[in-house]
Length: 90
Image (tube, rainbow, N blue to C red; front, top):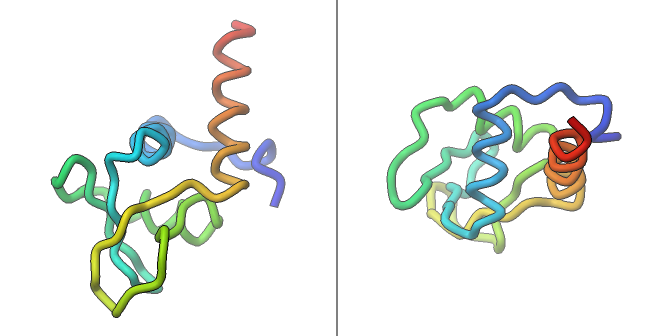
């Protein structure tokens, strides 16, 4: 998937930035939940969309429901870089 063709909303971009800072955990699940600074992200649609788009992933395998560090995938990093480039050009 080309991250330049995916339109991200403000919550999705904020979640990607939090994950890039290393302050997020994700549950090991096909429908994951995200925790930022230890607090549950209440927008489950955002988290699951980012996971299904392959923008975010668990840093390691775990048992179902286990919380592990969340990471940006290469696609997620490219989307975040695209946002930064667009803001800098504006």
